[in-house]
Image (cartoon, rainbow, N blue to C red):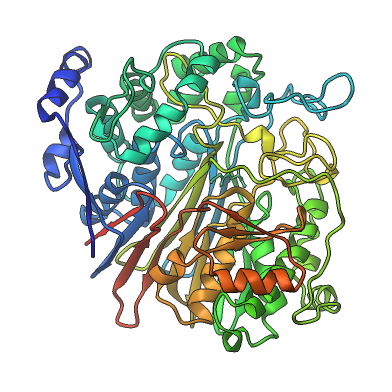
Length: 579
Ligand code: DON
């Protein structure tokens, strides 16, 4: 397999850059000195590998290697997950985060399921019409740029909750991230491009300069050092949640709010806490599938779509043909229509979960489906799906068979493009996931209504779908992906590829994807999607639209002989590690 090496152009510069910080703060390099096999200044991207005991697949090679090392040192999948989340906050600033939120779905070896919701929350001062002008129309950018776009971050509190299942002291799990921030790491070409593309946004939206905006443009092989972030992580290491939600970090966040009209207060930060949610579970052709419940729509959509197509023998229709795509799209259309109407934060809105995934309801929903005939969505002023989105997913299975799937995000790529001065991290723009106004599309073209309207303390509806699969009640697969509203569809297509079309994990991850979300009534196709299928779909009356890649799916699967097969998406720098 082709490997890609990311390495420093100027090895000597690293120590020079890092030296002043090292002396002032006397940071050690305990983790990387003890793990000389991981070199932040030269590392390889590995897309697919089989390991004897444990594996991680994530958006960044260094984060995956850190997770694998933590497990090799005696940690379990929860230890690794915490270390990976903090490391991604440093090495993958577009989506890895401490200023955002996410969902963890886990299955312990004893079969216990844990669904942890550390989604961002609307601040106490938030209100339904806060993004509307005097004519009732959404202000451009207010829910996406600057401090006002931010929900109260949940990631740090989330990691502390997960720690209840871990074995290694929290301080040790944060240490690799601190060292990566303090001493830097070498960036890839796509990271350099992302930082350059957002340079003006960072400057415009932040109250001061940050590590992300240096004078020259970024190039692959440059070293990114984040001293302020290192100090913030150190405060978390020393004080736990209080190192983020109270004291200097909280003060920095609130100060940044005042720069661009944000409304998060010290009290909001102090009050935030993650919530445990009962996962969505269903069976599909001998496989037991587990995914995330509201406030994510991901699990319900996945259950609906897979159950809607279960009565049809899709394997006979062959992969990515007009017949199989049309069947899957008609299920997508129906499920996403339900999303817009029925789903929101269950603590504020009664989500009819049981009905939505019930056999009886789903049978009715598919009653008007006619193979080979295009359905129709109500026409509305729908928006287009945004192209530069960014979230991140990682999958871990340890040697005991504990499975962890985490999808975490700032929402858009580099969130609200605002770096908290003094604290060095980027804030989310998750408020845009609320329905700002009934029927008005958000940045993913998704519409919604009262179920997902803004209220103080409410969590915005998500599409994130960290997913686990068991076979005969034994751990089998952990998978997930970023991509806004495309997420449930990607996981759906990934699972159908493995279960019905008998693909390997890696093949199913890399296959070209399609996406329909009810409104707009068209099928988005990745550029590599087969031309002849597109033609046949058009002949059936479908509108098709080619777009670049969506998602970066990362998974770990257990083979029949108990090995861990890890696969990272070809679409990004995603990389696997294990032992
Ligand atoms: O929660 C959600 O559904 C979105 N905020 C996720 C954003 C996302 O996946 C962007 N990534 N590619």
